Length: 123
Picture (cartoon, rainbow, N blue to C red):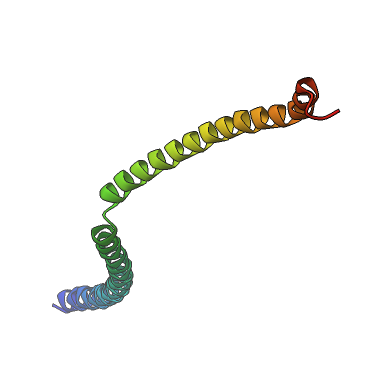
């Protein structure tokens, strides 16, 4: 019986040591899991803040688009651009016409003394 008691005692001590080690592993695992969960929670909070910022930016851009109405504004821009191009073409045509008229007037004014001499009005 003494042998069984000694073996039982040894087995019991072994089980106690295993239980202590197992409890240590469980505590360490729990500590590690808590740290991991806290880290994940902090990252989730940080990502949520980033998502909120981006959502706010998207909402602001949508509000600006609603106010500005880029499709209509672009159409107005194209119309304005065509009018400006037409204006510049018109101005250039008027410039050419004015140049021709100015040249004719200059030519006529330079010929007046010769014509007056030809007709005998001046000597």
